[in-house]
Image (cartoon, rainbow, N blue to C red; front, side, top):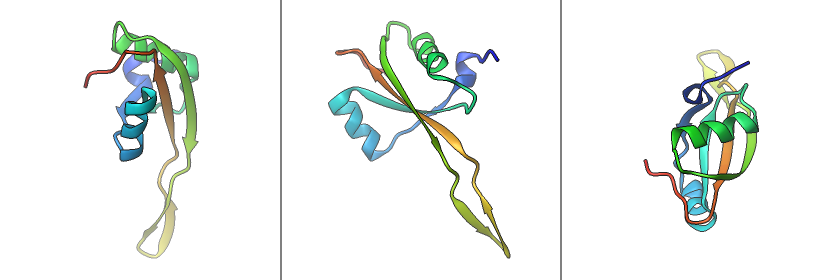
Length: 94
């Protein structure tokens, strides 16, 4: 299944923990498509931000949290997070 770079990376994740990783380890986090693998994520980042070299990609499937809706319980959808480490001295400008 071929996914376009814009389909692979849905949005950046901007939290306090990720900001610390970006400063100290040059790691960026993205919410990605559940069907995307590490190779597709790497090529999507390098295509969307030309001149950026990806060193490693780590992925996690995050389970949706249970939520109460009136009298029943349902769950938020599962989603996938990718932690992308860039080469030394490179960064992604937003």
